[in-house]
Length: 517
Image (cartoon, rainbow, N blue to C red; front, side, top):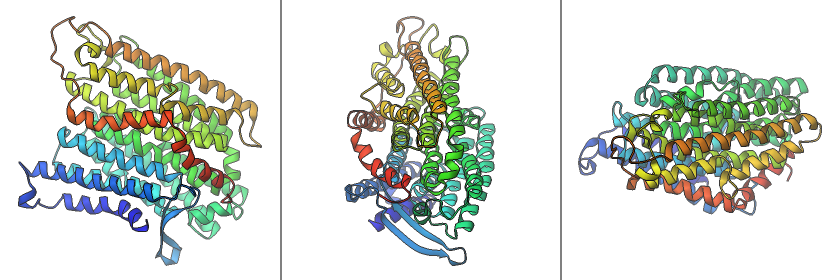
């Protein structure tokens, strides 16, 4: 188990270096480009297999215990250690990350985005995977920061070199926002580590803030929270997200929404809730307010983009929907209750699966029609997917109803539990304020249903015989292979939520109790 987790974190880096080397003659296939793309599929596939093996070997009777640990001294002067481990909170995120990277590598093998060398694309993809996996596996504050920052450069280049229109501006906006947030976050992490005398996240969580004064906790939550809120992204620090999603290639959008946003909310749960509980209690009402505003703001922005005549870009619309969905995650965290935090973790996974599927589908639509403009797709010729590409229309309708939180699918449970958590927040938090946030969040679910149903009506319905004939290919085999696992897991998590909640709940209970089960 120790070896498996260390392998999962380090192997993508080794695979990235290998991707830049010349392919052996017998493995080139029809071209060196095909060889390096196959290399990407192989490496991410091996990582996924290792993550599945880690999950099977995990002691599911003790999900609150940190397992598969590695603890080696690294920088002795600062007491920084290479400390790795997983529990019921991080394991689902680790597994979902490995799955999404494999599906993106598989999709890119058949549909590589236009840009420079495929070698550079695969190498950057694997560096990005290593950084995201490490974020969910490390248990040292400084290592967490390094892993958190490791993803910025590869994602910048994936947007700037393989993206679409306005990609340079979007890439710069992405990296400037996240870097500025990270500088402030580093100050907060150093404040905790120096004051407490350790950077070990397990020891800090067990101490539950007893070594940190109230003022220190408030300063730490403010500094670290800003960096995490930018990555989440929380309204009003979200403005980099729509541009980045719109400009990124399809797999870049999938990974940005499915994995990178989760790094921010994971930091709130793993670091701020257990290490600075008093500071979080001070800021929780404000975090809940920003979350509630984000839910409604994201939904209203999507409604405006979906309206006829507004020339709304479908990728941009789904990006704004992420602001709303991540608002539910932040609302659950702000409640500081086991119910709310479990809901936040469940919504994290659901959002990764469903929004990843939506970005795959919109990317395929853009490839077929040459545009993601909603007015063009619903114009005189009409995308009319139910008539022209019925399987793609069915997939899009499924992803939309899953995203709006239809009971029986994964999107329902996370948002419901987050609202329940806000309805009865932790002791000491203002119940009238959180009741208001609950009402606003519930209203946001209605707005979410409205804009997603409008999108389905405009893109999927219509007369396929109207206007000039358009030869539109339905779902290809490689698309079916890349998208079906996301559909299956969305249904599984919706019908059997105990699979996920059985892992997260004991770990959350222990975390909120200061390391005491």
